[in-house]
Length: 204
Image 1 (cartoon, one colour):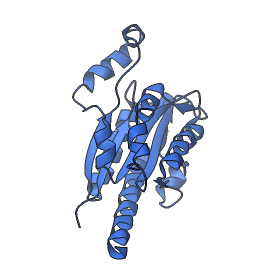
Image 2 (cartoon, helix red, strand yellow):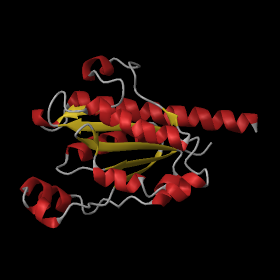
Image 3 (cartoon, one colour):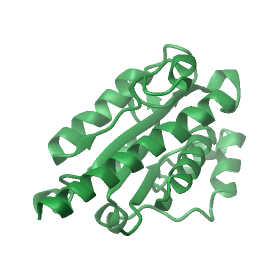
Image 4 (cartoon, one colour):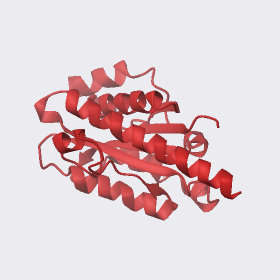
């Protein structure tokens, strides 16, 4: 059977979610998937970006990461979305990408794929769970198969978030626990997508 196609589509302003996305990509590749790592377009005004040197620097440092397109969603068997929290919700940049998927949704081309999500916030209770749950609302509408990490690996008892990998950016860059959690979440997504595809092949 061909490898599972996994798209990792994320928005990151200063690099935290980007680091989690790279860890998820690594985990998916280790699980045998073909991976597309994609950042969504930056829609913030230049003056807002330039007002924060770390934001402008990250945008420049990740210029080589391909921008997400609807083709990436169509291609994928499974998709992991990543976003920082914005008042308990996904960032508007990621929402803008999601809100442009209506044609694919209408054709049923987003249904029956595996979906999962990861996030970061500046503080420990900065809306991580509500951001992941908000993304899940979209997956319901798409008819997706939602695969959270749950407590299915010992690292989840260290990271503490069964909804998806998360990190407190105020504590610094993602460390070893967050990286292992992202690896596990991506591996679980790949394994579930592979099982679903194998089951569909048998059932005809």
